[in-house]
Image (cartoon, rainbow, N blue to C red; front, side, top):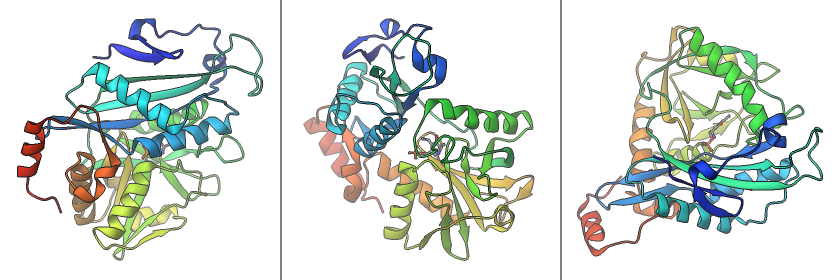
Amino acid sequence: MTTTAFFRGRFVPIDEAKISVRTHAFNYGTACFGGIRAYWNDEEEQLYVFRIRDHYARFLRSARLLLMNLPYSVDDLARITVELLQREGFREDTYVRPLAYKADEIIGVRLHNLKDEFTVFAQPFGRYLEKEEGANVCVSSWRRVDDNAIPARGKVVGAYVNSALAKTEAQLNGFDEAIVLTDDGHVSEGSAENLFMVKGGHLVTPPVTDNILEGITRATVIELATRELGIPVVERSIDRSELYTADELFFCGTGVQIAAIVSVDRRAVGSGQIGPFASRLRDLFFNVVRGRVPQYRSWCTPIYPKTAENTKQAEKMPAAP
Ligand code: PMP
């Protein structure tokens, strides 16, 4: 259970972290956010935050798009988050939600000459998508927000109405998730996750210029696929009809982690079951995020002080691939 938030420059009980209905961000969606996971490692009795600095670097880029001036660096934000998690003391997988928002209590839509605030809270978190091993998805009738409307590379609060429209349409029609196309009809991403396609032994994913969020998990998948699994990755636009003929498709993102797509618009993808590539990648991914692969340990920030006992336990673990 969440007990604490960092709010208006200090740690407060979560019930005190409240904003007015007059807040600019509440009225106009003028806020940006992040979504970061921390993974519990049972052998080491340690909580590891995954790629915290990369998440906060993107967070500050989103803030910049909204003309925000936050008094915090990436290191400051990471330190605040580590302290928040130490105070919470979670011993399970956790989700961290930082937000930067236009805090003035005024009427008038704009970005400039407004006060910016930062807040962050955390909560225990399991799966975001129930069917991570096999999601049935549709192509949404909603199009992805365009860079010249609301830039998708910024994690802008107001823009998530676009995601919500797509997700709800998909679920009300009996699907687990939606794939959203760009205005010119190319595959962009899921409602809150990036997309990869396996075709002819290659991994293909839309480029950052196809109105995607530049996902940290996407970058992780690209690195693990090329370096650890020896699979070439191509960043290029994907046509809708390629979804129907792909060998494998999967989503990736902080929430969804790595989730296999087993059908699109009721057409089976490949064998209609999680494919060999998504399967191998998922196994490797979960070892990496829990701090079990030494060469990727620098992506994992430990929250609790190391004890002699948990270090000994970790050393007994078999080496990860
Ligand atoms: N696309 C969208 C629209 C998202 O909301 C997310 C989740 N942050 C992602 C992709 C995946 O990004 P990441 O891997 O950085 O969580």
